[in-house]
Image 1: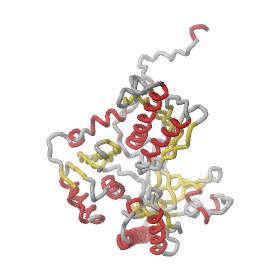
Image 2: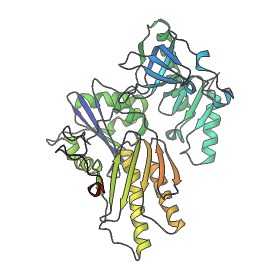
Image 3: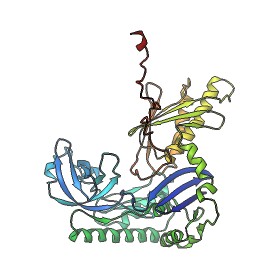
Image 4: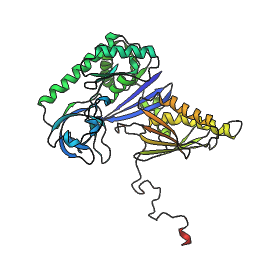
Length: 421
């Protein structure tokens, strides 16, 4: 069972998701800074860079958006040319086009945009020009996958593309068809707005953080949503009634005096989860170091002494660490390249068990994670997609005095061996 806990402060909304009592997701969103991912804009091409096979597009944000050639070609791989044309043959400065944000602006980089449009609904993702039907890989039963594939082919028309989501498993044709009709109408509205809108301008904004959570992760049969604002709960209930009318009673208003995230134990869990050093059950530890594109996680036995021998102790520690790493990647929304330095194991079967444990945990993550395997140095290599940077995590910021180095006295760093020169 999942519990969704939403705290509504003036100017900010914070959300926590727990599964069987354990915190697995956290996000925060300022009222005036809703994320851009999923939003549609009518943009204007500012410049085209053939050397990068990319273009910069003005969508009305502080920085121009980045449009790569792969996001201009046909969304179906089988319909793309064998040899990519120069982007100069596809786009010209001053040209207007509709783009969708696929990755948030971050740091010095603008948003990444695409012309591979997609609109997520309750049961499916609608792609107006993709020309194929896909079924979520998380639906394991082959007969159900085949049923949904046939259903999707029957419902789509022309070049439409559909991806049947995991929650569509067992759903009736009427429910899926109703979702498709609503998404078609939504896309038609975007097209109509684009005809007369100036460039740049916003055509369609994705749902709020709470609505996205309800759409993507809420099971109306078993999950619970707690909110500390009656007005916000009314909005959430109205949206939930659109997709699951019988489930509106799953939303509950918290009326305690203690802040809701503290009352549910979330604040303490967040503090531990976003620390540099995380202690596991039994005393083993993780050291978590993040850069913009790379995260390194070091596993240590520390005070953990369980197991009948050294190999057994190491394997047990690594299995505990794998489960926690999978949870924390999701909770911290870690993206990019991830290297986990597990304690050395002698037996290949034990290394396989660690990978299988991590795969089992990441399957519950709605963000795609690829476990690439062990490197020659014995590190476990992974990648995890990250598109949103709007989560205001409680991890603080580098110290203004030392810049995060931990040294505030201004003295130069000692180089080992320097005293011998």
